[in-house]
Length: 111
Image (cartoon, rainbow, N blue to C red; front, side, top):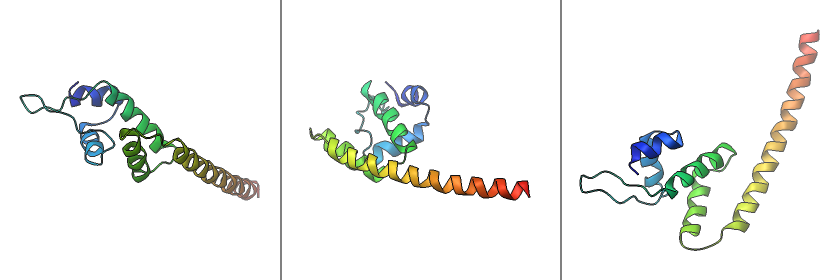
C-alpha cells in the first residue's frame, strides 16, 4: 500500500511514516517504478503497535532495539517484560504523586 493509505489507516502523517522508517521502526519500504513507497499490509500493524507502545511510555530507542531483535528472528519477550514492569512502576509512582496533589488541591479549595 502507498504511504498515504497507510498513514490514513494508521491515523498518522506520511512524515511520521518516513520518520519511523528512518529510525527503523518500520522496515525500509520498496519503491514503485514511479518512486512511491509501497508498504506491506503488515506495516499497519507495526505502526499501530508503535503508537500504542509510545502511548504507554516506551521510548523510540527501546522500540527500535525491540523491533531490530524481532526482525532478526529473535524473541525479545523478556526484554519487553522487563521494560513493561518498569513502565508500570513509573505509572504507579505518578499515580501516587497525583493522589497527593489531588488531596492538597481539595484541601486548598475547601479552605
